[in-house]
Image 1 (cartoon, one colour):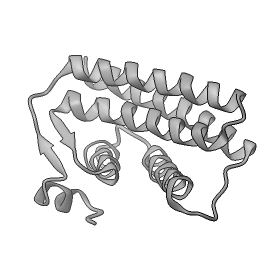
Image 2: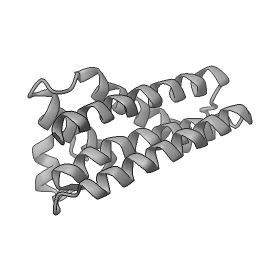
Image 3: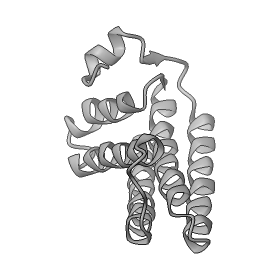
Image 4: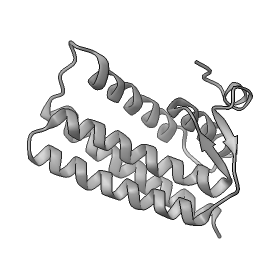
Length: 147
């Protein structure tokens, strides 16, 4: 699987679409729904579900930026590569947010597919906190670019 921006474009894993502020706003709404889902899962001690919902909130918050810019992803990894290329390299986004998105995607992958991986309350709580922070950072970026 490609893990750099140019490969994502070349392989069609990032595709141009008409830019849409409306889709961006809808994606942020979806991110907030997933944050609530993660909170409820954590309260209900469904730790794996909390991790999945936390990552999904992050994905939708990042995807909002792509929609605004006129891109659609066909790969979760390429969402991070897009943010890295367009916003980290231009000093509009701290690299830590892309690293957090990549890390959270890997945790989600392990939780979903690794038969020996079992989520803990601590991991689920950390995932939710990270997702909240990430969504907030994407909203700050969105305000910056949508002026």
